[in-house]
Length: 202
Image (cartoon, rainbow, N blue to C red; front, side, top):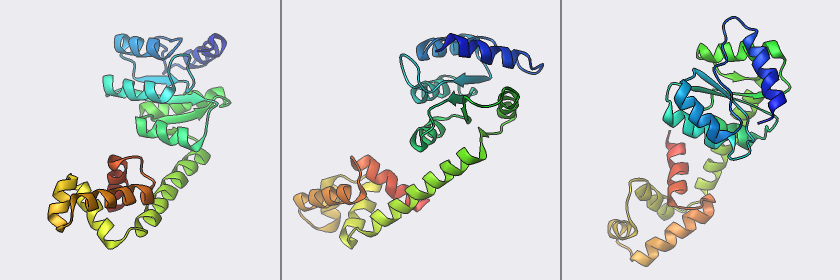
């Protein structure tokens, strides 16, 4: 959203013979509207925009234009933001202090199907996913055998009543088991608990 920075990025990219800047936007909603109109191959996106964050814009861009490839170019680089951007569909996550020629190379790489990310950033993403997996395993091992049974049934889409019928227990008991599972897995709701279970099953 900073005009001076946009101008510098535009000049850097337009100097490269294989790249063409087809438009520039001042905020997220403007970017979404322009992308629908101009159908770009790649969108270079800041994480912090006046109206919405880059993750929300990325998600909507990928949904509206499945062929578009989003590269985040930002100073915001917490592990959580990087991982959320990747999950939203971003092909790259680059720092604004990147060298101009490196930015052009990274964007050309994305056009060829590569991921635009420094080795350090990639290592942080891998560590985050490994840690998440380890945490999920640790949390799941805290479940009792009966709670593990209930979680498996939840993953199959069973309701409290169906769980109670299958395990021959009271519905109120089934609900208590679900509450214990959510607490032990640190899940905000049943969907998140099931997501953690399915992550372990992969």
